[in-house]
Length: 542
Image 1 (cartoon, one colour):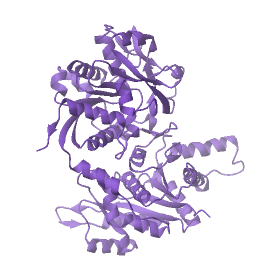
Image 2 (cartoon, helix red, strand yellow; image 1 turned 90 degrees about the vertical axis):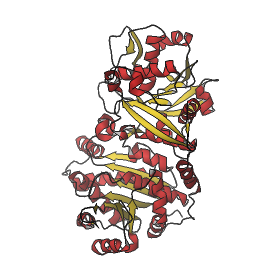
Image 3 (cartoon, helix red, strand yellow; image 1 turned 180 degrees about the vertical axis):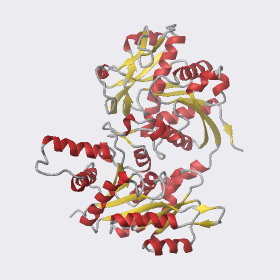
Image 4 (tube, helix red, strand yellow; image 1 turned 90 degrees about the horizontal axis):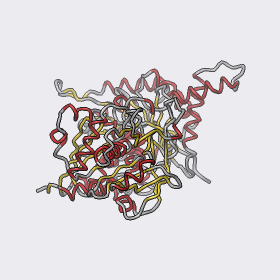
């Protein structure tokens, strides 16, 4: 007889941005190291149906799943730390919940009833919890992260729903509450009062935490833990500090394991578990912490002032660098300021390779074009992601093919040479949310190309998020001057990968390879990009 599924609810208190997503992902990592099959779910309290239309400066990157879900960036952490199935069912917003309930009301499903937050909204939230366990068979543990902070008005329906869920499955659920224990430098003291108030607010809702994780700058003394235990009604051994890691976010699972968090969770949920095996994870960290050389990579983008806007790009570069035993130094450049500086050489020089990531709209286009030309003419490794590939193609058209007014119709709808134009399937679509080309598609790789060397196979699957594509009317002209279209949509004509023939490594992808990189398995294109940058120039650590 299969054991009942267990549920871990991760809540946060005191302040936002404590790292609930990283913590939840680390817990998943530790449970997997003990042979358990886990799944993960993120609840976001905002009323947007998904983050697809939100400003990257406000929300950070949009992480895309294979089935085309536009989700919170925390799902990127889930992917990098665990083997959890990820789909549209893995990220649920208040907007989705209310939209579903209101649509049912309009259909007449609730005739004769007053539709209310309790029970209709909370019932739908509970249904989404159960749905997340159905993504794959044999799921043993579902880890549910509730976005926001205890005390936020918008989080209350989710907290009420998990209170009900816990009441209905008392022996199958635990709550891990992440809080903040500040150190006041002027007083020279660690203060537990914010944690006490946060737990009190949670208990007023009817949820008593089983484990308290304390974000802090330095490890907490047993005296402080005893105080938190006393005032929060949690056993002292269940008060665990989660101090700031020194070098990498990938240290978090190791630090939590040292304090016995995974063993405690298994015992509280009465799970059958194996001895923990973190050998590969620890080996990856050792390689990362003991690099043999230093490499500088430039990222030329539109949202570099907000690092979370390119979170997966940064992480994919770090994965590849660790694989190559390289210490990576990333320099970020706002693309719209490159033009202001006059000379692209002065603006961005000094890097061993450049990444031009995705983006939307006209701002910063010319700066990215200058970057592509700089890399092409100086023979510096260039990696274009989505918009970065389109930039590479427009620059080639202007300066190699002689089409001086070539452009993307996203930027100039009246260009006489639209080498990048709107996808046919996008014509006539006016709504913004969830209407792009989204999710995983198969791509056929051409032989004897950089792409084939990286992937080592003929058919690959990658995730997309775009509206514009290369205009195949120009394909023969591009190829005649040395552009190679090394990847195309399987059984289709859409250009997926392009590369320049007589260049050490200049390649662009219409898809987003960064979304499929893991610390133990760097994405092959990022791996080869880093290798190409190392070959060009790499400073040895003495």
